[in-house]
Image (cartoon, rainbow, N blue to C red; front, side, top):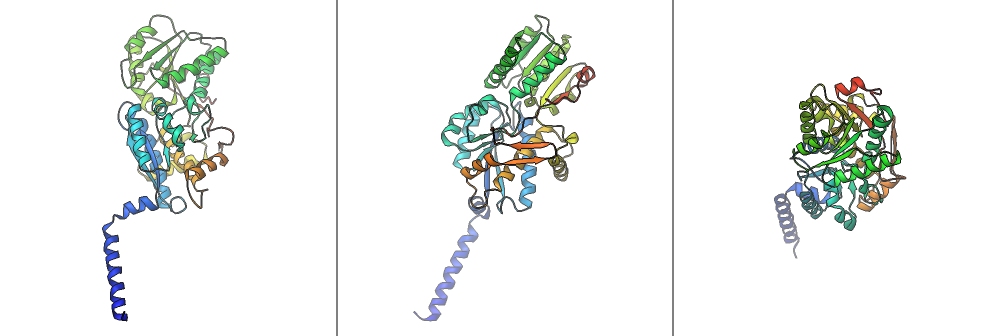
Length: 385
């Protein structure tokens, strides 16, 4: 074939190739070939919406910072977020969708009943389930190699609460109000074991329906006998409702609750006389001594967020530690490599130690936050367990 026709033929092939490439969305190509996809299903609507929104906000701020600086070994992170409204059935459907999108891992899910609902999927697929916003016992024991928790467990939080109520406040009459699902059952198992070890027992246990504010029946049970304290397990809306109703009836007890309540939603909305203590798994950002906390504050401020809270910090730390571990898979970031590197990873900063060498839980600390009325009576305003 003459050289002229060969050159013309090559030019036509090149031209057609250019047209084809131009017609393909660059973003799709990037997602398929370059992006590290993480799947998140949590509550962006409903009674736990603030937790999902704030956790996602903190994670996104870190990932945006990371991507602006080259991502993970040159690949940007994409957080694919779906709303489940804190309803287990929605979580199952969302998880199936995320797995069809071939996400590297499931990341930053919220809730015990939602996590419990997808356990069959996690066990069968072995997909990494990273840093869920729950302290549930079944995510920690038995140890599943693909489930990795950042936060302290509900058992550790409840142990700190019970120690405070029994050892420091010398209370003897303690009631438990729980959400009637796996979240409440998990807490009930923990409290009963902790008290049994101390040769004690609960005065009563009351229940209420998830995703509802119908707490009057539980309050009626609490009002039937003298109590010193009430341990509450649920979301922030029914908790506020319970406290307001108790305040209206002049029920003078100390209320405690788990970190899942979201103290940023609670403490500034309480009647002044209400005594409330919330166990926390993250320090107050502005008072935090961890080196990464200053980076969190700077990045959040740069992103335009001035009101900072512990849930945002947890989301930020979830993203931070995921990225630190994923960077160690320099050749090929696979699920197997990611899980292997988590097992080997150790991090030690200023008063912050993080590792999975002996357990599938990275952090162990529990802190307390207090309402104004409870803080005035507290013997230990900065208790860390």
